[in-house]
Amino acid sequence: MPIVEEIPFSPSETLLFRSIGNHGEHEALAPAVRRALQLIRETARPLASYEVIPVQSIEGGKLYLEREPATPLSIGPHIDLIAKAQEVFVYIVTLGQGPEAKVEELFGTGQALEGYLLDLAATISLGLATDHLSRMVEAYAAQKGWGVSRRLSPGSLVGWPLRDQRNIARLAQGERIGVQLTSAYLLMPRKSVTGLIGVGPHYTERQVGSVCYLCRLRETCWRRRT
Image 1 (cartoon, helix red, strand yellow):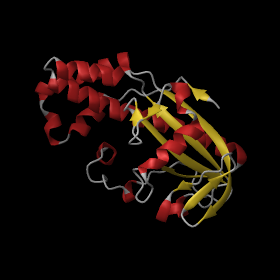
Image 2 (cartoon, helix red, strand yellow):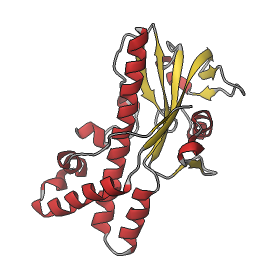
Image 3 (spheres, one colour):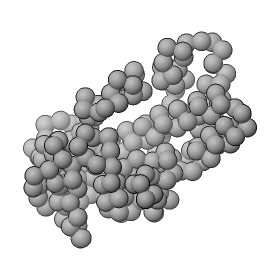
Image 4 (tube, one colour):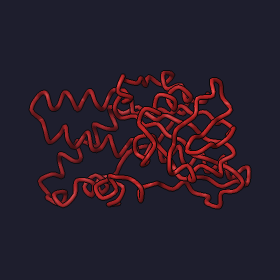
């Protein structure tokens, strides 16, 4: 079960401004934005844990992997996105507890703007850290002459219930990088994400794509403005 420790993640000032939206062009925000970027560099410790698992079968909307116990992943109506996979990378990525602890401290001391900007910087940084893992998957597939699927995550892919984070976290052994699951299937630390990427000879794409066109947050997500 590999653990990835050296993960680049720093968002740029331009990216953070764009993510704020129409209010992000005001010069008065510049010092707070720079401070948020400094704080994310100081507090975040991105880690990833993953496993490469052969696909056993796909039945209906469920993905069965060659792993005991053979609990299926209930991906649902968009199972076609993973149907060509011969293997899947099952992963979990986290920034650690540092960013959210600092965000709580800032809000607790009345520094709401600073807390908001740091939380936003952490969300972006988690996305960038996950992008790094995608590049690793692309390199793995390229060595085999294979292609890759889009990146899929329970709770964000329409039809894939959030409760499957329990199975993803178990398969990727999230506890090894300090990630736990609540009774509501939420990840702790909160700046963590689970997912999977398929690889196989029948995929034609060489770069891991997103499922933004299917996401209920597609009109507001920071990635859609970059």
